[in-house]
Image 1 (tube, rainbow, N blue to C red):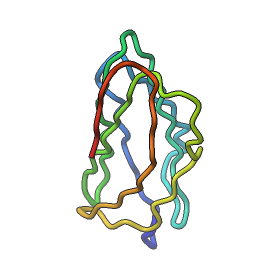
Image 2: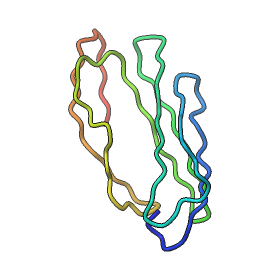
Image 3: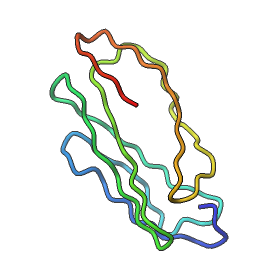
Length: 109
């Protein structure tokens, strides 16, 4: 919350059964603080999965896309990716190189 006042957010979980969400809501989000959300994917097949979480607040709505790919071999993915301050209706991105030994082609941009 980069505003100067407390913010009440409603975080809606993914709709598909392949993703689950954990979040420790504490009521209003005070200025300068954030809500931690953990997304877990439970796959059933070697395929691509996608969904989103929806965040609603009085300042606007936000859709956060979720993407999961099968069987990526040992990889060092940061536990946390900080996008800094990103205004609503703006976007931020990070590039993480992935390599998979699963016999399946995929590409995501």
